[in-house]
Image (tube, helix red, strand yellow):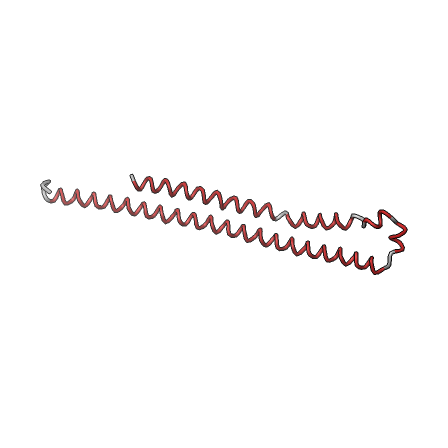
Length: 143
């Protein structure tokens, strides 16, 4: 009775851990789309004109080349930072996927070893019962 309750409790715990591990793997796969989103943000930012150029086109034409270069440099830095951020997000997603798979493997191994333990306990009981029956038959039923 206790072994079946233990097996049921372990089974429920294993199911909960498997569900959590699968959720981690699914979340990491959805995070793989993050670099595409970051690149789209970079393109959208580059496509938008500067507010000063929209307000006063004549003033933007007369702006010194230093301001244009600094604006271009700012866009390049922004693009590089977004690219680095996208790489870190991709690495983070891959790490979470690997951790999820390792958790799933650990849960499966734990379930396997618990199953082997329950099986061994069952075999031990059967062997003890058979040994008791053998002793009883050898003693003539007086034992």
